[in-house]
Amino acid sequence: MTQPLFDFDLKRVSRTHYITGKAAINYPHAGSTTGGWHFLSYFDRDSGIAKVALAGIHYPDTADFFGDTGIIDVTDELAARGWKLEGRLVFIADHYRAAGDLIIKWALSDSTHCNVVIADWFPTHADRQRLFSLLSLGKQRLLELGRLQRLEAWLASQ
Image 1 (tube, rainbow, N blue to C red):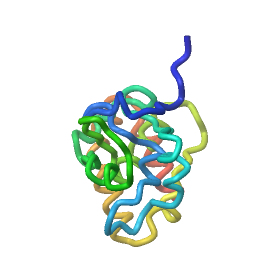
Image 2 (spheres, rainbow, N blue to C red):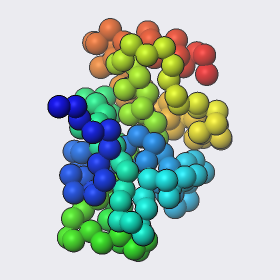
Image 3 (spheres, one colour):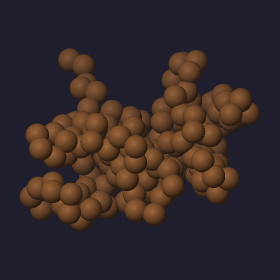
Image 4 (cartoon, rainbow, N blue to C red):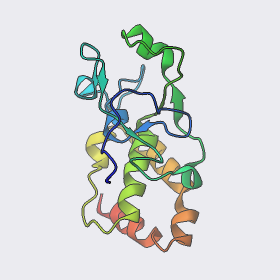
């Protein structure tokens, strides 16, 4: 049986299985200049359905690459937006970690196309530098897996 592409009820979200990917990229973090464009495409409060991908379930577990950098608790923010969470904590990747997770997923795959567009998703020099700093945390692990050159070639094309 194949694994569904998304979780729909936030019940499996944890610090280990945090929300990542495009749902996290599109989560509007206060004070951030990145992401937040299509929040309602992933979090439909009226229907009570969240269409989210989870680290370690739908995406690779990237703890060996990034530790817990960029994983944040959004329980109170979601509750303020009207989500009933029944005493559960909800963790999500910030925009940098979500992009890093997308990039690592691509780097570990055989796909020729990485769907992260750094200039579009990270408009300022400071934003890009923060992403590059996160990616540098994972370089040793990519080297061990024989995938560092793939990442570096992609970064040079950006």
